[in-house]
Length: 139
Image (cartoon, rainbow, N blue to C red; front, top):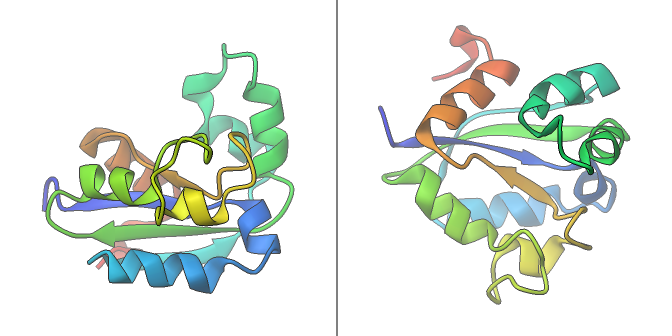
């Protein structure tokens, strides 16, 4: 269903800090249904491929290092207007600027360690979902 699915990832530091349950709870309370979910760990090379769009940015190397530092939880979420609604639920990249009650306002440590990733468009949600989940893993 176009526009009804988005991709999210709980980042390594949030996993290490035992925030998976709290973050999933906020997602479900926000009206999202979990379509697919897996805990895995990215290699530096896989993180580089996933964040390839940022390869020219000065933070790219640090981002890949951080994203391969420990396990992540990858998710496909479903809801009407999924991408926009999820971006609102996660809050601003910088937790100091995130609205109270958003995932990042509660669980992010900093702009770099911002707890979760959320797709920024329907097109990227499909690409990012396919990066982590095969067709038979998506219900």
